[in-house]
Image (cartoon, helix red, strand yellow):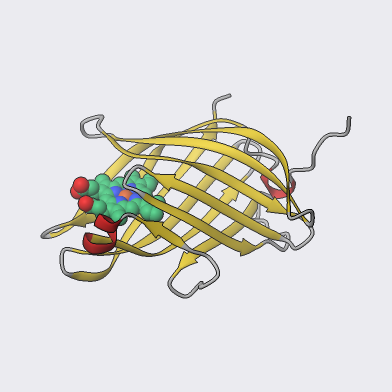
Length: 187
Ligand code: HEM
């Protein structure tokens, strides 16, 4: 049996922790800022064929985020990172427990940082019509996510990301809900 080639996703499998998280999220009267800790758990999800043409490999993950000030869980997310070697496409589909689902994508052409870590970017929503965001009727009416963009850095012992989620909320358009963190491998 031959080993699957996970391409730029090959370092992800394992458990990662980081305590340098910085969140800016919407409040009725402005912005809430949260320093946070985060745990991500990645497991291989194997290969997938779509319509007998598209051959993918995927890694599943679950992450949780706790506010450092009071230990409260302020974010929870699960999804897949997916690699299509033939077309050089990276996809990231995930759900969060606000009834919002994102299918983001981007091209990967071998980009690395100065340390040789893989660097990939995905986006969905406004400005990226082929990559979509689905959400509940309540969220569409009251807290509409219009765009998601993420930059991910993945190495053998180092993982980092920064992301911007645009939200129409509290009568304001395109609130920039931003999150970033750096994590190290713990398993
Ligand atoms: C590390 C990642 C994230 C953290 C720490 C985080 C944290 C938060 C926090 C603290 C709030 C304010 C909650 C409140 O006041 O009730 C919030 C609101 C929100 N977040 Fe996130 N979030 C993250 C990622 C995301 C992502 C990826 C999405 C969507 C794709 C998202 C969508 C929203 C929406 C739509 C709201 C507005 C709902 C509301 O405030 O009532 N968030 N987030």
